[in-house]
Length: 116
Length: 115
Image (cartoon, rainbow over all chains, first blue to last red; front, side, top):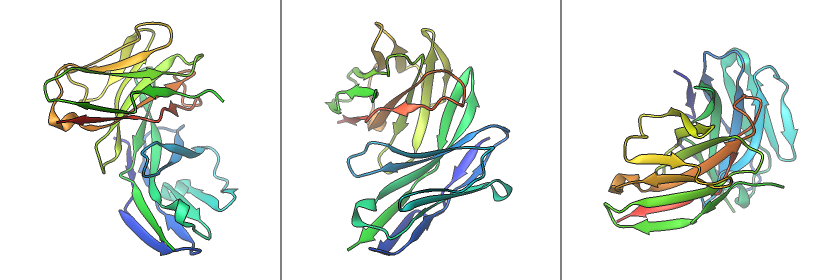
């Protein structure tokens, strides 16, 4: 079965530190997408990135960067110069083939606490 | 930018009562989904819906749950007789097609509290 593992349950950093959130996945599909979502205390899921399995280029968006390595089935997320507003739970997710469509398989999340 | 909306944002109900959670998907989307997140846990797939019928459902989606598209805009999740363990955040999502190339867009969620 498809699976997403986020081994880090909780990480605490001091503001301005860099932090990397790990995500390891298992899939039988040859074509799939990987995602990162942020869930602030208000509870909504904020979309951060979607990555196609054929595109292994790293991506940078402001203070955020993502490292996709198919060889190790990992899709790690780095926040550079963290800020208090980055405090949230971060979920990694994988698309899995469902009947006629796809469903998302989420990891258990990593709670990031950025201390001032 | 079009978005998925959900009402209510928070619903409190007594155990054994029926609840209906409402979602308005993005207007040109054809595939609809419900996901559930028990407090402090991961987001889990419940059901997908296309062409007025369920495409796939998880083992969580038992006979107490049902989904419906009662009109051209709403997509609802009904829980017939709520249990304490149904307390969770429920997310609706929609996508333009069933292809993995089409992203699912999530609504802001409805927090259901069963007392």
